[in-house]
Length: 572
Image (cartoon, rainbow, N blue to C red):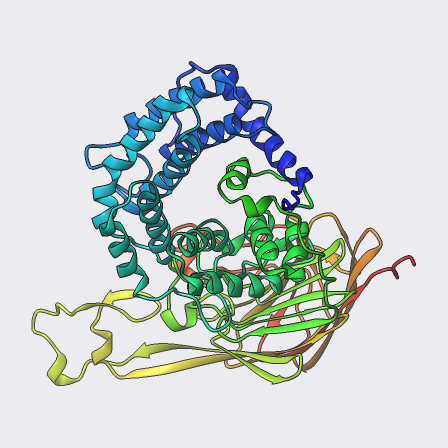
């Protein structure tokens, strides 16, 4: 008995590919200009998939073939004498070229044996693959996920053009071990790179090389990602070490992976995630090619399992806790890399947001805490401790120094002392050789994650310096009870306010337990977000946008803040 197919899913994938491919097929001889090599390869692959798919309006279309050939010639023109592709800021990059070669090899699989109309395309794709093989076989990488993208390209090359050297090189990379931790997070902790690079590459390698451990790694990552899915259909990124750490990331790119593993394993929770990933419609034109290359994707999903509520998760390796109920979804984060490394850097987790709260349409996107202490930037926890169920403590101590005269034996007649970075700035003062007078500042935030929100106790100790708690609400709501101070900002002192969006709301109640009264709306010097000198020295910022509510003062302080989500009862 033949396996049933999910015709609705396949037709939706074909419609999406057609929206992208049909305009290209309508002008098959139009030369692409200003198009990167990766986009050229993806267009060739999609046009060939549309030609091959009975569900596409371009099935069997000679114009689709002609357009694919036009783009293929442009792709050949972008290939350099090394076999790598020109373009982008990564010069002569094996991994960047691997992205393109992966699509070239997939297009070759789709074109081979598909009839005489695709003979020239098949030959052109083989020529490109052959020219790239040597450089990919010996080339290096510079990010963790690049290893798996490069390995996937080598495995695809072997699939179409068998060569044991390619497999040997893949095994050399894989011998390093997949960079996935005990919680199921890849080392870059990035939703973007998990969805677009690591998971699809490891799935391909698992199939081509018959490596069950690689399939297990993907399943573990997808299982952990279930607890990172937020009520708005995005994946949490505050923990990421890559570019996506400052912006929402949609669940949609995870669709083929959740769908494939749900079908192969029967997991109802993965089926639920696949349904959610497709809830806004299918937008990925590459999905049609994937259905042809991986027929399992076309099978019906198993019955989705209901979302378990309430639920909790604490990812110890990333220091991220979440709690979800029918009323609220909260995320608490204390895993920044900045306290350990002492700098803002590409490849580090730098986002200073330590709390988010979702209550339907009322969303508290970011809670951050600035301190005016030697311009060292906002609070980023150096440690996170679980005190009890749902209760955590975030801690950071900052230390700056004043330096004494050099000891006699360290002085130089020419006064040419070493240029040294002392943690805040650099100067020709041989800082390590000098006695230090240190000044310290400690921030502790205890958070109790509740079914209806969160309770915060913020303790700021050390010298009398300004601080400001910034609560950034997603646009679309109305702050009530706080004083407007201009430019989308409000001031809250002791008391309460409500942020209301439609029928949903988040209420904030504050109480000073110790310290001076909170700053009023006239203290713009206090009620502001300061990104710290690592940003301001180059004229940059990582500030949020939206409706920002500030509480602030001159520490030391102990402040209690209660966040309460309120939503109307669901209609039975």
